[in-house]
Amino acid sequence: MNNDHDPLRRTVIAALASAPLLSLAGTQGASEISRTGSRILVAYFSRSGNTRVVAGLIQRGLGADLFEIRPTHAYPEDYLKTVEQARQERDSGFEPELQNKVHTLSDYDTIYLGFPIWGETSPPIVRAFLSAHDLTDKTLIPFNTHGGYGVGNSRSVLVKHAPKAKVMDGFVMEGEQERKTMERVNGWLSDHPLTG
Image (cartoon, rainbow, N blue to C red; front, top):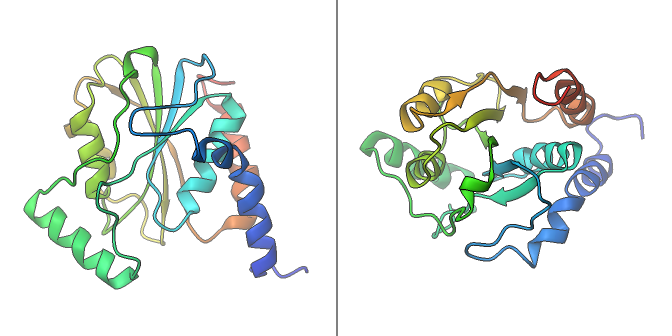
């Protein structure tokens, strides 16, 4: 069991980290968020589950509310088809329709926004989320997973699509490094100026 890439170990870590998500799965409808009274919202988009794990750790660590960003029409299960669709959406400027919106965004001061990096930028559904919500005077803190190429131009996308938000430096990690996810997220949260 010392193998860092052991499938059982990965499953256990993902299950533990996403436990708060499971409790929300049946309650989060088209406009519902399980409320904790927090002024912090963790909103995330995840295709493979890596970003979902980080979102769960942040949500649990901060006692924040949680919101999953979902397109009305899910991306294909096939990875290569998803890559092609995302490329076409990016190149055309298309923003997919959101399955749900945060109707109580005024209740939050800080939004932790999580997403994987696709094609060295943010996924089109994240642009749609930003366009659909007024983030004026909100503090926006990204957290990203990537496949080895870093965050690309995702920060400039956030600034462009949420021009009246205060975009702070966020958390970034390569998506396949599960064994260090918990320590890195918890360390980042403990050192962060808003939470430390």
